[in-house]
Amino acid sequence: MKTLHPIRKLVLVAALALSPLASFAGVFISVNIAPPALPVYTQPICPGDGYLWNPGYWAYGPEGYYWVPGVWVQPPSVGLLWTPGYWGWGGGAYLFHAGYWGPHVGFYGGINYGFGYGGAGFVGGRWDGGHFAYNTAVVNVNRTVIHNTYVENVHVNNTVINNHTSFNGGTGGIQARPNTQEASYERENHIAATSEQQQHVQLAHADRSNFASANGGRPAHLAAASVNNYHSTTVNNFNNNRNVTNNNNRNVANNNTRINQNDNHNVTNNNQRNVANNNFSGNHNQVANNRPAQQARPQQPQARQQPQARPQPQAQARPQAQPRAEGRPAEGGGHEPHR
Image 1 (cartoon, rainbow, N blue to C red):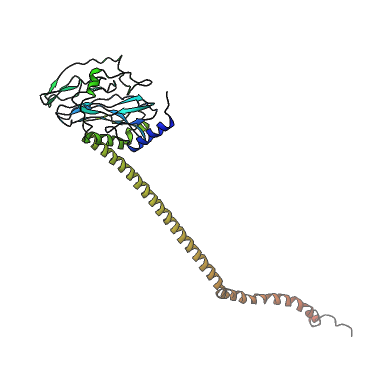
Image 2 (cartoon, one colour):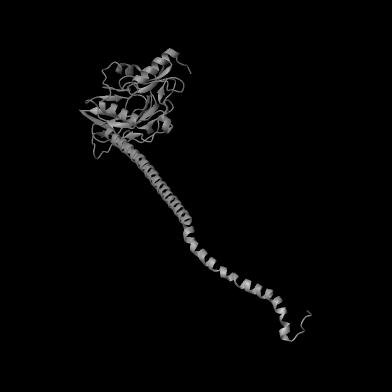
């Protein structure tokens, strides 16, 4: 694949950074990165008479490719048709050719966007007497509500038009060129996308789930009945995600608060217990130190027990007195010693 000259690449990147959402005012620029394949989806029912279908496509911003869901929109005036934008390889880069409103549907790269945009022209409906008539063989319309309808079966040659390729030219792209009639439509007066369409692109860019880097080329929100419907869905999803995030943060905060409270309570209790124990030990020691004066009383009985030593002298005195008694036998009838 051909690569860009460094200076040209720098210019393209700078232009992309300055206008990432300029899909309808100019072109998107993607350096050497082909857009993902077009996803297959079901078209939502037309919300009312006069709405025209804008097929979904891959837009590009500084964060990469993101999906702009298909949507029903109202044209800026009666009689105008929408020519979808398309990606085309040229000048060493993929360039996005912005869509536009005009009296005819011009060239859109041969991309098969479906629902009447099979790669060339538009067969999903036509203007008839100031009212738009819908081909119910191609587009999803409730005929009990909208009566400007007709049925025209359309055959798409899948051997010529790839149903999923999203870009024109280059390696693997659709090799289609505008015919003489389509080239003449390019010279007609065109009207850029309405503010409603531009808002839709901005909402798609704000929904992070639309980015190919997040969805792998399979977006969750593929189409919407209207811009307001998509806006409501996007805002609700954002609010739900924010509520979940806030609730999780609150739960974490509450749990941390409870943990801190429990820890502080335990620390306080432990400190109080330690202080109480220390005070008790200190008081106990102080009491123990003060007890000797009081414990002198138990020592008095020990002093009183000293008289118990009296029997011992009596017991010992009696044996010692026995020798003195040995000289008394004369009194008991014995012989008197010689003088």
